[in-house]
Length: 83
Image (cartoon, rainbow, N blue to C red):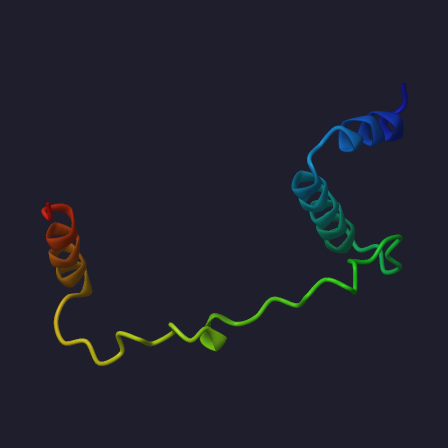
């Protein structure tokens, strides 16, 4: 069995998410090793990743005074000790 056949066989038995990861990695390797003409390109229909800054929760603790870890500890203790 050739390497290409092995790759195809392994790839076909992976879950969809793992197949996408494998494809992304192969595209990364293709770019890294200088092939200027990509054989495959990423699916253009995929939604582009949004910045975390676009999330409404971003910066919600910007005005917090003190240590956020301590605040979280207090919140967790209050939640876990309720009956």
